[in-house]
Image (cartoon, rainbow, N blue to C red; front, side):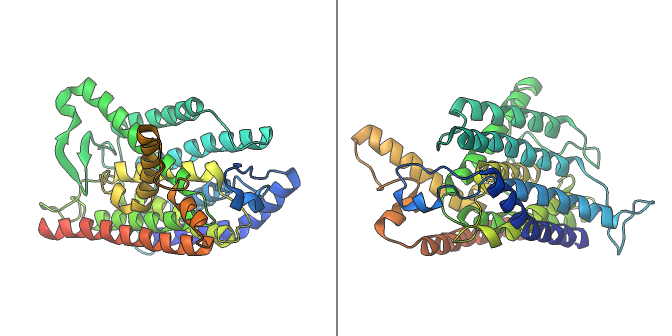
Length: 370
């Protein structure tokens, strides 16, 4: 528990103190956010410093590394009763996703700034970058041995734990290929979901704090109820659960510190650098904690906002009519007349309800399985 608290605390302090320094750097370089012409209400944000996600990524990395360094001892047992301060394969894979998709987002943001327009990388370029990072992650997660000798990931489709639907029934080779495809769908969907949500000051950042906080609790619970600690029908065969909780706490703390500067009126925007990275890290945590489908409930706000875009596009192509004045749905409420702060606050409430629902299902399944 101490390593989780240290990771979250370090990351929060780094983001809180480092963000204004990064803002000054961006202002000196003239790295401002281009605004789409359809969003006339957001023209006031034109030129606002962007790529703030770099601070979140850096703070999360420092939080994770800092917690391990503080607890490190020569004999590897850790301090204050902490069982281990060693780096784990699973945690490093999630951080790989965070950095890898953050780099794709950075290239997208930088292209927008360089060309002084709201369009960055093409869809194919962005999907290619996401696919490359995802394939490397999925392959290592499936075949690299974790701390207990088991691979961090499983070919079984999971909800609150692995289900009986196992992709490996198609054979070892085809099953592995299906897992790579499944991981790509999850990671691409989650990263794009957070990216679509990041349209109002603090909206995606605040919602991300809640979901990463939920995964911190899930990782801790799985560690305390692991099959090595508490064997039985309700135990969790999740490799590196404690270190996954450390990563989740580090990212949550980084988002929390960044939110101080990203809340309305925002002094900085996270950009695709942050949104793609955060979504990918959430999907990575879902895959490695064996809660893949549960992510759809925990991150229900991201799902609902993404669905509003899908519904809008489908309705317009099929009927020629729009369901919303503009999609995603949070911009619809802006045009209706809701204040930005009101929209963000109410959507945070929705995000909190989704997180509570997801955690209730996770814990409830454990109680029933006793």
